[in-house]
Length: 566
View 1 (cartoon, one colour):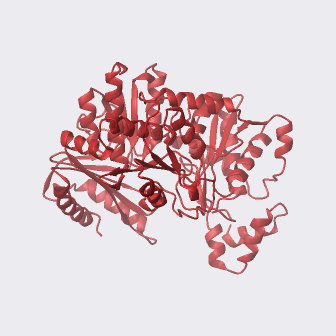
View 2 (spheres, rainbow, N blue to C red):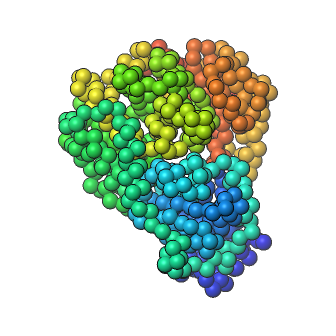
View 3 (cartoon, rainbow, N blue to C red):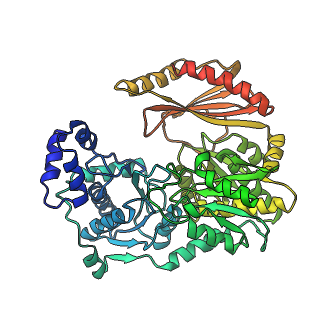
């Protein structure tokens, strides 16, 4: 069916939401605007749905959410005798509306639903799935994307984001669902009265808090650490402040403009704690109050960024740096307390810093690599648990500001990470050190690592073909040198018989990724983006010092640009 015909079908619908109808009428006769909204369906993948809020099959609205939920309903009814689903949502526009629509579709299919009655962090949903022993979980969030976006993430019964196989099955059921006429919404209260939709009790949050606090690394009550915190108008405010208070960190200043939920994100249009701009108001408040550390959690509170005061100025700490410091701190504290498990395991993604390997060697921890995405870390925790070895897991992290130090959930957790970062900062402050001092000492011990990400865009109709051609050329004729450094190993993750250099105990699935391992411990990993027409190159360069790293990076970056044909 042509997009104009689908548009007309929506216009003619008798059940269409009034706001969506108004938007569709406003673009009548505008072929480009209609085409943008209806040229395809919003794609459902392992991350669920994510898109711009609005009218149409290629937008996030109650009907695309309902269609996805009908697909999920079909999947869980096939896979479970008595399917049950938990639902959470963040502070974004229409998040609660979408959560209610999802709950209603599930209930209409005879599936029992547990829904949170307030905005809730993604890690709490991951915990609730396991705690309530449900078949799946849904969280309505677009994470750190701009305000015009919302999304729909699905978790399996283990609290981990769904596998590609599960996503394919859900998509198959979605193909048999029609929007908007197939979804007559408005029976939410009836399903509540019938007991098919139930509110999640406070016991779940309390159990979650208890698990987080169990991972506390011997914090000291009454610490004089001064913290500036911003939830970036998202879900972190209540849980992060509660946990910090419980561990004795009470000198916490909130950024007033970003404290309350605000779906417009008016003071941080791109609410991503990886970006300096998102922390600008917090740093300004910290400067006025001479705070020791700045924390910022993204709207669904699974990532946390930080800036630390050092010699009178505030320095941003990237995800690799914070991950290595937390890894070293947790191992050191646990070893000192006699709490290190036998055969300890840490897990990172293949694009995360190789500096972690040096830390792992010091403490006798096995360091496993997994594919990009925290769900693969969660998957390995689940495998350990099934073997009765969950206690072996001590830490997992990825370069994109995601951290986890316990097996109680299967996703990154910014509530727990905020606690650990503050405990680490307080621990070192008592010893006269800032986190920048700690980082410098780790560089001296393990070598200086320069990490960055470069993206190469390939727009236009032939962009995807060009990207595929570049990846094929890399595999057919791997470089022998890169920036004057010899290539020691070319690792192709599409090859099931590849040699990983003996560093990994995990057999990874096939993936369109290659790593170029260089003499001296540096590495460049290349993969296509899963959401955009871009090739991404992740640099992890081991150098003598910061000054040397700039020259090494320039040489290797220039060589990579030639390989990427840009």
